[in-house]
Length: 213
Picture 1 (tube, rainbow, N blue to C red):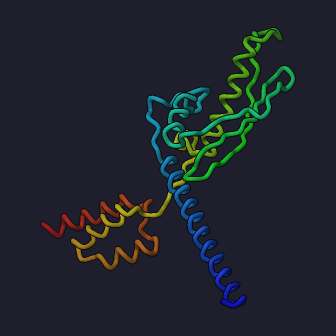
Picture 2 (cartoon, rainbow, N blue to C red; picture 1 turned 135 degrees about the vertical axis):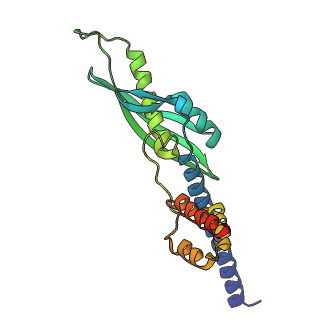
Picture 3 (cartoon, one colour; picture 1 turned 120 degrees about the horizontal axis):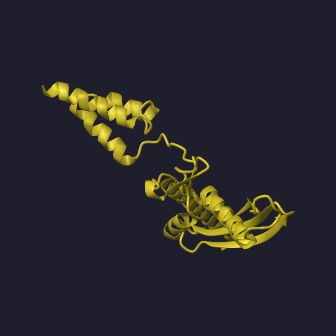
């Protein structure tokens, strides 16, 4: 085999390897997106939702349990912590988690006010304030990076894309009233989507009932 053919073969192998790698990376990112959307859509049981100063929140233990189930192997490292004078304690932490074949990291910072006895400058329990600062920090990281308890912290984004089950159900209902072509076109164009899915189903079911009378 001459040198030109060897070079062409070598380049061809490189291109195949790169294409394969690109496909694997694309698949990993797609799996990440799907998984994070699934976690974001999880509904937090009402019994786990607490209130403080009119704001909803979830205990660390609840969020940790979800992290253990959805992102096993995660870890938390305190990168830096310090007192901001005598008023607050701040923690800079780093969350590490395994995300569909890729190890990822994300940093977070949170501060917690140092409690003092009423009318004095005497601290109540500095150790507890430090612990609370770390807990606040890791909870913020759980929510921002892992989408845990998005429903409680108002971070859910409604996805308008129809799931396969939604698509099939609408198609089957449309067939019963001879509207399959029209409904398919509306689904493909986005006129019918996940946000108005229930209303679309209800309308088709009414049409089916009227037809069967």
